[in-house]
Every structure is written in C-alpha cells, then in structure tokens.
Image 1: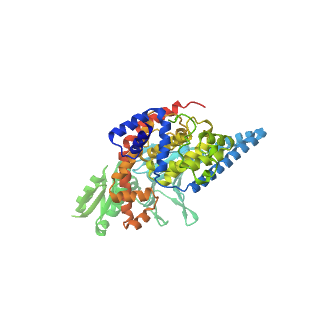
Image 2 (image 1 turned 120 degrees about the horizontal axis):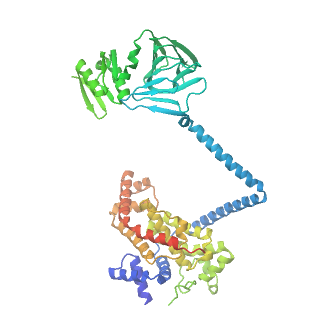
Length: 334
Length: 226
C-alpha cells in the first residue's frame, strides 16, 4: 500500500493532485505517526526533483567558519568568567563600574535635558496674547507666536535671566537687592535692566527694543567685540539682520506694545511690513502681487483679533482685492 | 514496512550520498541514524559535517519552494544547521535526523514568510524557540504544505513578464538594473513588476498565518524540559 500512497503524496506535493487525492494525502498526514515517513518521502522527493543545486562546499565552509567564530566568542566569555571567579575584586570593580556608569548616564541625561529641567517655557499660538506674572513681581505680556523661557525654580543669584523668542513687553519691578533683569534673545544680544518698562521684538525678521520707562542697557556683539548701549525712555533700538544696531530717539514706544490690546498701530507703515506682522502674529502667509502694492503705506490704528478683519479694512482703505487660497492670502489690485 | 518511529533511517534508499562518503565501507551503515548518533557523541563537528553533506541540498530545494529565493533558502537551512549544532540539539533529538531537519526547515520557512508577508502585530516567536520544537500538532505539516503550494500557485498565476522579472530578482537575487538591462525594460518597470508580485503574495497569503500561529504557540508551551 505504501508505493501508491507515496506516488499520490508526490503528486500532492507537486500541486498536481486532484481533490480526492488531496483529501487522501491530508487525511494520511493528520496521523502524527506518519510524520516520520512523510519526512523521509519529502527527502526522497526533493532529492529526485531538486529545485536548484546550491554550492554545498561553499556553504559548508561558511558554516564551519561561523561555528569557529561562535566557539571563540564563548571561549573568551568563559575565560573572562574564570578570571572573575579567581579574584573577587574584579567582580567588585565591575559592580562599581556599573554604578559609576549609571551615575554618569544620569548626569549626562541631566546635562542634556537641563533646559527642560531648569526652565519653564510659556508659549503663545497664532493670534493669542498672554500675560505672565513672575515671582519677583515683574509682569510680561507675551504677543502671538512667541516663547518665553523662565527659570523653573525661581530666580537665584544676582541676575534674573529670561530668554525670549518672539515679542513681549516687560514691566520689571525693582528688587531690594538690586537684582539685574536680563532678557536674552540670542547668544549675542541681551537687554539688561534694573526696573523699567520696555518691549522686545525678537523674530527672524530682526530685533527691536522700545523703552517706555526707566533705563536699560543693551549688550550685543558687533563682529567679535562685545558692545553696550544705554537706552533712555522713548528710544527705539533696531538690530538689522546684518548685525547693525540703529538707535532712534523720541519714538512713540506705545506703538511697539499696542498688540497687548490686540491693537495695530501703523504710522506710514508699508504693506510689506504689515504683511510680515500678520504672518508673525496670525501665521498666515501673505503674497503681495507686485512691488508697487507692497510699497503702499497706511496710517491708522486698528483693533482686531483676526487677520481677515484687519486685511479687509486695509484693502477697503487702499482699494485692493484679497483672495484666500488655503493658508495664504493674495493681495492684488482691484 | 519500515517502522517510522525508529531512529535508524532506511538503508535501502540512499541516492543522496555525496561521492566522498560513498567510498567508505557500507558495512558501517554510513547513512544510518545510529552511525550519525555515535559520530555526534564522539565528534560533534564531524557529525555535523556528515549531516550537512547529506541533507543540505534537499533541504535547500525544499526551502526554496517556500521562499522562492536561493539566497534566503540557503541562509535559512544553514541557520538550522548552525542552531542544531550550537544548542547541542543533537544530544536530545527524539525523531530521526531527517524528520528533525525537515521540520525545522519548514518551520523556519514559515516564520520567514510570516515575517515577510504577514502582519507585523502577530506575536513573534524567536527562531530558536521554533527550531527546538520536537512535537507538533497534527495539522502543522498540512499547513506547511498548503503554504508552499499557495506560494507556488500565486507565482504561477502572475502575468508572464511579471513572473519573469520577479523570479530573476528573487530567485536569482539579481539587481534591478541587471534585470532591466537583460530584458530591455526600464528599472522603473522592474520595480513595478516586483511590487505587484509581492502585493499578490501578501494578499494571497493573508489567511495563512492565523491557525499555524496558534499551533506554534501551543507547541512552544508544550515543550518538555529536557
């Protein structure tokens, strides 16, 4: 009975068996006692009709090589084990090493994430402003799309350090021990105060500081030199992208913190500049059709909380057309 | 009739001897399980070599029916031999060498295909676990058969050019640009053909993983400590 069954099985394995033969083969296979003989037949079948002829010798030498490598590794390991048994010290050393490594890792982690641990960040989204009260009595108004980083565990030492990216107005209170208050906007630019009110604008477009009350000092780097500049109330300092610092006296500094009340104050402000402001504050991309429109200016005082309203007013005043395409707004001639 | 449960393997059929062994006297029972067993006891690496020379080719031939790649087939079979030696499985196998090796290779192939074409969230079993399986559920062998027959069928049903490209890439391990040059088509077309074939396989084999998976799981838990 074996030979015909074997033949059927071969047909079945070749995918040529009819449903009856298939059923027969599988029923026979279900009996685990037949597994042994099935594997014998598989061997015979594969020997009789090989699918391809592999390079056996090459494979053999590869296998032996792998085994040798594996042996060497285990030998090394056991040798290491033996040396550990010989001297208890080495185990201890290993243990201390492990502890030292963990401590080192912890320190490294702390060092790399020190900003996260030591500082707290306030962040505003597009079109949102917020008021932050610091523990020393100072207050900060944070404009839209801005980040302020302050020490998590309070101000210690002789300096009150904060880091600003964006736009904010600071109202710094004077402390009894004359602690300095420093606003850093980059590695090369910082504003230092004793007690005063001023606003800082630190965006990719440039940096601006407007002083309302008191006295502040700007520390900046010009080339490789560190330089200082003292500001009086009404002064406006602008740091151009090129690194030049420009001081203007007697400006209306309220203009630079008008955003606190969602107010935009334009004084012969070009449409190009306005579109940059809208992009900074509301995250909308403005495309101005041509240079001529971009150069047009507007003067006025607008109170608004959304970009569309502001743009609508501007377009009515200047007789322009506004189209919205996704997240960008296109301004063209009417 | 042979007793399939004997450790000794049949002496009657042995066309698979390599020439190097055939010059040794038959009286020693060169291909018998007993002979291999004593060799493994005395000199395991010699035993491995004998086993390898005798089974490597047919095992590769079988593996390639599942994976359709010479390279993968050889790698999988070599892995089985390596683990067999490394974990000293030869010291406590209860079946014949033939049966053990075929089972291990079929299992390896199944695991490989599942990893390649199955969903990734299926519980992973390490190869070492699956290789050491000594007993299996009755349906396992049938499932393995279904699997390679299915692979066969899917590849057979591919459009001619697609199948040709797929086999050149997978079976022969040829590079895309080599195939493109040989068949005078763009490498992009080669890519499209191959991804089409792989997609067909993935879809067709979708149902093949569930039941055997459970079986393997049961097997893993039912292994008796030796």
